[in-house]
Length: 204
Ligand code: SF4
Image 1 (spheres, rainbow, N blue to C red):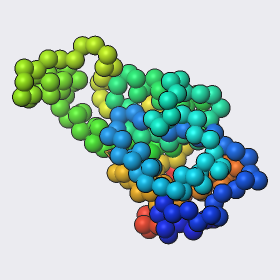
Image 2 (image 1 turned 45 degrees about the vertical axis):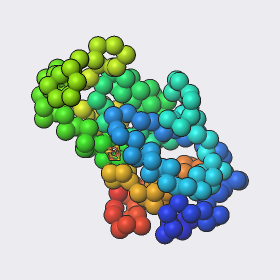
Image 3 (image 1 turned 90 degrees about the vertical axis):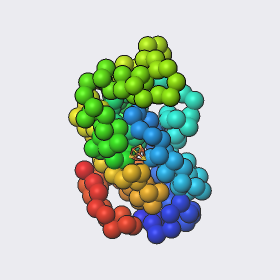
Image 4 (image 1 turned 135 degrees about the horizontal axis):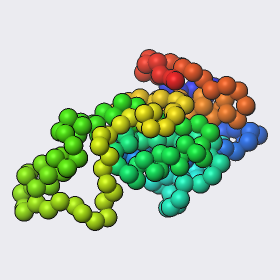
């Protein structure tokens, strides 16, 4: 396995041109995008990643529909509205390995704080009408309908691997991706757990 002690720095040993190219996606549900910012912190290792996988969907690619036959998808954020739920189901139907990417996807985390404010209508009223500096108006167009609660991804679809952290560090993301892509390219069982560079065990 490639050395994992130098976050985001290419070691040159993780590019595996003789292995089959995989199709990889990332998705942004009810999250702050911080997990994707951490993904971008992989810096030049992203070039190594593209040596072994094509990025076929995600916030960084202008593709509208989730494609078929995706090998691995990192899913950031809780499922909190109807758009999130529709995309989560499309991801599950078209992805071999779904990764719950970051604490909002794994536990609900920040996104699920709204659950304690009661039903969506009460929360929207409080945020948009009671507390804005200007005259508040409830959003009625364009924005998707909120679900009754924000839920972790595994409560709506089957999740294969959990990658916690708020956000997961670039080191942890890289360690997980190398382990998963190596196993998938070799046709081996997925690693059920491994110890990351921050000495934190994670897995499924
Ligand atoms: S886990 Fe943290 S960084 Fe990731 S989307 Fe949630 S709040 Fe943002």
